[in-house]
Amino acid sequence: MEIKIGTLLQLEPTYTERVEKFRCKVVEQKDNILYIDYPINIATKKTAFLIDGSEFRATFRTEDKQSFAFNTEVIGRKAGNIPMIMLHCPKAEEFIKIQRREYVRVETPVDVAIQFKDYKYQLVTTDISAGGLAVMLKGEVAFKDDDEVKLTIVLPYANGDVKYVITEATIVRIFEKDDKTMATIRLIDTDDVDQQHIVRFCFERQLVNRRKELNPFDL
Image 1 (cartoon, rainbow, N blue to C red):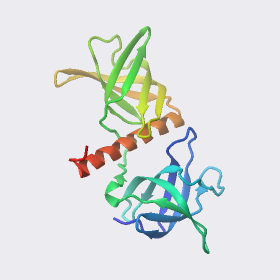
Image 2 (cartoon, rainbow, N blue to C red):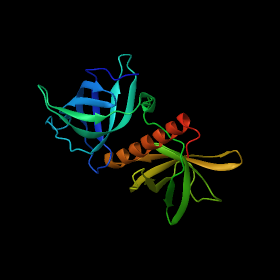
Image 3 (cartoon, one colour):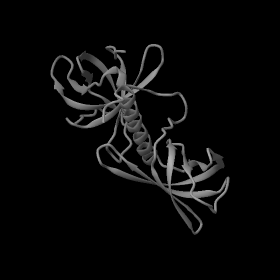
Image 4 (tube, one colour):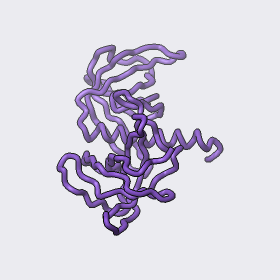
């Protein structure tokens, strides 16, 4: 698959506390470099001047209405009739197809603390998305279905950063699976910044899983 000239890209910074989105157009492509026009901040409608080395999550749609995402980095500029910014473009097989549902769920272990009244539990997720997560319970717990709890979710990123998302949540269901007790939890009142942290984490883990599938013998 190839990103065609004229394709619209949406860029979201991956390493920032601010939630920003930029829109730009692919003007040229050569080897593993995309040349884009200067992006526009979707919220302010102003031209954005991206710094070399800044990293983004780029999303685009194909002619058959499929959506894909990939990680990219600003690697330079090119002068001409249209001033252009140069973005790194990974191989097509590293693109992540965006599922048309509310949030993408990724199977991965993440440390999470659940507080319910005076009780606190240190647990590990079996999967996570920006809308909720599932955890494996250890022994008896005080909470039950439909109880509201407070979560502290630890998100370790590929660059070594660690974010702590603190949010309210609701216990959806406690059930048995493969002789283990599980709980599914829905996040509520999670702010936009924290949701973006979780989305970024899930996207990174998707990329890791994709690379493992493509290169199963790499350590």
